[in-house]
Length: 412
Picture 1: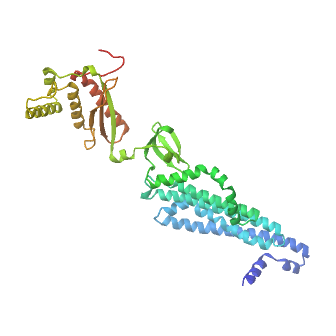
Picture 2 (picture 1 turned 180 degrees about the vertical axis):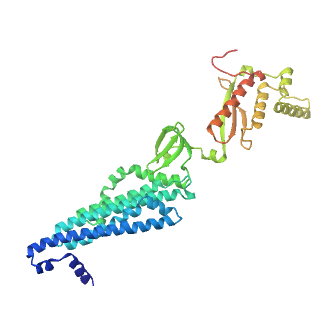
Picture 3 (picture 1 turned 90 degrees about the vertical axis):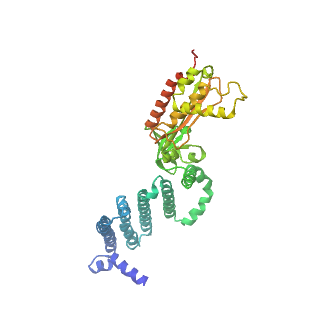
């Protein structure tokens, strides 16, 4: 059956007998037959190109326009179908050239190798366009929010390019692809060195994705690379961060695993951002409150509540005392209670989260009073304004408690 089909196909390209019947000499008929065969296979290739690109592609375009899905529109936009259509004339030429150039094995072999390489490259470009389209299709899905597959797409591209290269070398050398793959073991160390960053990036990308360490849009800080901004791209080899000063920092993907970085996603998810600041109180200004100072400060609700509570505890305990000045209040203590009251009544602070006013270890620079609280929202401008306003007030109110801030040079 194959022999019959081969004979019929050969008849389409071989008209030497017919030419000789028309009176041409055998040598002239032979040359004319080759010219006719080349013209005929080019005509077949052109016809196949017209059918695929002008008919099939038009039909596919119209079908895609009628569907409600997005994925086919993306594939059409990436010209995946157009690129695959280029295979049709190449396949026609590849099969036909064997009949036309059967008497010229060298020319036939070179032609088929060239056409084979062309088909490999066309297939590679089509698959590359398909992978890019696949990435865009993925980005339209809800699961893609904050998760990038661009690194995996790049891995697939590398694999396809490697396969294409092996097939092309196999065609040019006449060596089996399996034999070429077996020979790669000898240069594995070199390949590992050349693709070191790619391999590290692939492993790091898998770890980042599996452990949900990094997503697109995350605000991260990585001091080592001067990065402080939002992640805009995650690829196989690099992570791009758009800093708040609008510059772009490019970080090796494997560095996101080997080095530490701060991801502020938790802050944004909670809708609150913590501030932690302190000021140094001059030790020499700390004292027990005299009656006048205590009376003046007791008009403050948070201070009054504390004073009343402490006096009630003292009365329940009785007159016995184990400390000098027990029951008296220092201006620093009342100042801390005042700050607690300010934080608890501040409309810009998240009252459900931790609020702390505490005294740290005294140093040669005075007594550090640390204030920890969470602002509502994560807007950077509102965050900075709230802190500034709060500490402006604190610095202005400190003299009311007859306290002073430590600063260099000291002034009294």
